[in-house]
Image (cartoon, rainbow over all chains, first blue to last red; front, side, top):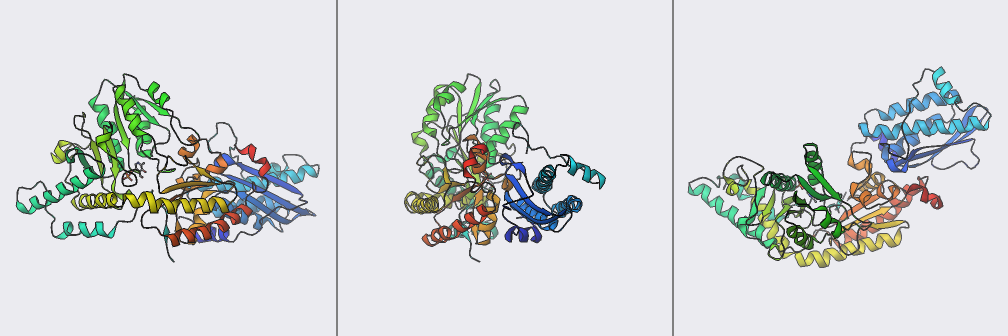
Length: 152
Length: 393
Ligand SMILES: Cc1ncc(COP(=O)(O)O)c(C=O)c1O
């Protein structure tokens, strides 16, 4: 199998698994049809990510990216989280077969969804994450995940 | 680390007896069977014997056997060749669950202007024969339906299907790549016109196969060249592989009883053990209309690739119908055609045994797999949210 050792290690030793019971934000991305769904939960305190956990249905790359993304945002500020997630994904993507791009992009989406949920609860605008991304000069990816007639 | 190989529908170990039979034909008896000299002639004698051995396992006459390079070539030659023999007919009937050797070819032919009917299957993987009867028209050149499915092992009633196809005046090709050597086949007792088989699925080497062409069937060669194989397939015979295929067929015939008793008992014990010890595990395909060696199970709420990776760390080699393992993002077309829900289709594992598997190996798999499944389920957002599973149909 064509996984790098780094991805295998993330897959074999998944940390940050689970769900935070009173999460500040929860977000989900993906669809069962395509074979991967990620659910991230975040615990925020004073604008910093204190804890990040995942539950993921998906292949080795999806599980590895989930662990990596949740690991890397821990301790980051919200603004930072938006940026690092992007980098983490890019890192895991390096050397992956093209079809695995799909799984990895999902991690970014799940994190985005969790942050959006957090912002909503804070009474902030719904597109706050997009705004932060744009402000940081990060490309806003749109990964087409529907249920009807879409390709995975 | 030891290897427990339960992926025999993908390919098999060459039986050492087969290899021994092949060995002289590389460095010593390397003549061309078409040559006039005795040195080549003795090779022609060996090829003739192999042809008899292959004919025997399917109850055919040796003159009806054409050696090919693999199952895929046999399928292509049968379908393509029949279309060329009946240029006024443009229609093909097949099923949604065929191997890509047939389905991808049919898609290709469709782009070239042929029309294709792909028959559906029910949730157990079975066909509706009335639908088949209705699908065949006077313009149907060929009906191509497999004997046994490579993913689920489900067996189609191809002898009955042959009756229907002949009644309707079309040609019937059967992809029996997974069936030959696993279940008894007797071409004298059925009306199948053409039948494909492949060496590497029955302990012969990779890269050799055969196409059975019933006497009197119109045929246009797919490989055009020399006069080999009675002008039905050009190209110098792959002698050592053909000798190997012959020996493998002889052995498979001798082991046929073992296949339906000991191998089946191993498969049944493995399957029952996994289903009993793992919740939310389901069998894919009909329980009894099935090859004795195959078991396709879906472990709901997890993804097959993860299962394969963890199994592989324990030395267990099997395969999955999940998307990630197929190089696409869609799960197995066979399981989808059967209506297996996505969360199940992605988490499917196919165990396929052979006469080389042992009781100890089954014990080993039964010990290793349940913790792998629970470990992956701990990571799954769907596990423990089972009441929501209806949303993932
Ligand atoms: C049902 C079926 N048909 C055709 C093939 C193709 O055979 P081969 O690999 O010899 O080309 C296979 C095996 O992969 C198969 O399982």
